[in-house]
Length: 219
Image (cartoon, rainbow, N blue to C red; front, side, top):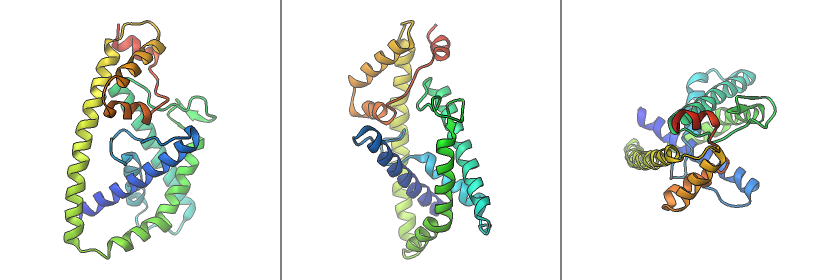
């Protein structure tokens, strides 16, 4: 049943968003609505957990295997997300270049190990608990909830992509030689617009525009 997996996706995307918010609260001492979307979800976590669950299946007798699979799946997903977001929107939204043992600044050992731990917790504890809770509700109710959440999720994606495309156009408009000046101008543009734009700035406070991006899209 596809819709039950969509419910799992939303649940784990929300849990991932909560983890990100708590982490950034300790880092910046304020609430930050993390993630590309406006709503309280980080889809990369939802996709990651679904991939882990599908790959491991019922083969959970080896905890080390589950741990390593979780690291591999989540690392590939985070790297791919960073790469494609940079290609599409012409900016780097997170950067681990200053962290030890990083790969092109997109993933690093500091985040890979927690992926393995969280993936293992999901497989052995969290997912069985969530399945047991959902089993208490009728299929009809779960289907209705899934449809409503899918419509909200779709609208959120449309609005968020529209905002990001306008930010991308603003990056293209800038003619300064310094990428830091371009970044400043883009942030000024974001601040001058609605809360939807400011959400992107707050969600990714360390976003960067690199020289190769400037050369490719501005000249």
